[in-house]
Amino acid sequence: MLDLAGIMFSSIMMMIVIMRAVRLDRTLPWFHAIKRKAAPPTKPDSPWRRRS
Image (cartoon, rainbow, N blue to C red; front, side):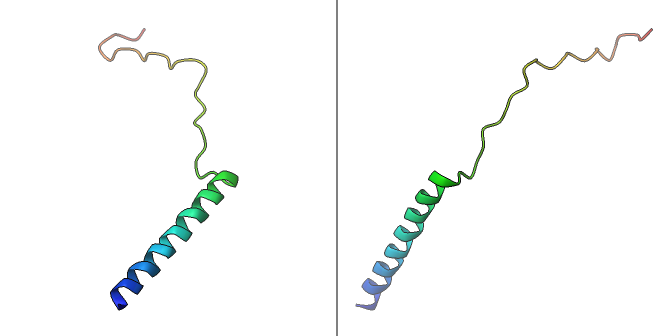
């Protein structure tokens, strides 16, 4: 009987945490989109070329 009560209690607590996380995610997202640079990066000079 105590095992069943423990399983039910932990299941209810997990559901509460999941529902709270879903609600908070709607109002306060935990991630933001990464803004990409407009121009691609320039290609560096090859190391074997002479610099003048």
